[in-house]
Length: 178
Image (cartoon, rainbow, N blue to C red; front, top):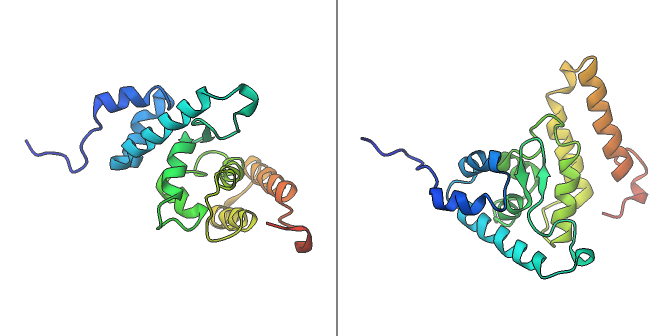
């Protein structure tokens, strides 16, 4: 029998990961990460240990391993691993390797969460956080805009309003510091 090009993840590793990642997403995540599953799991374990030693009020929003993208079940540990890779320059690079922003909301919520988590952890991309989100939105909406109608158009407008309100993307540039 021929060995598969990408072997199935070690069941013991998946059992360890089940403590830190959504169980129904483990196989999807393992497929996405391949050999990078082990360092992602090790980081999630370190973060959980660190969080367990802190009081509730000391735990930051992104300590531990929260889901950043609920649609595609992408956790902070995955994003951190990919963002620290020298080849990662933008949110689009993160999206291509994790599926961040490719679910139902098309990044309307997770892009801002991701940029906030990266900033909180001191992980910089090529562009400022605001510019990163602006470029990410443009990339996500570029192909969808011409085909939008009805409910989809309203959902897209909600996403646009969220970004415009949170980040002043369509406001005065002199008000933008980041």
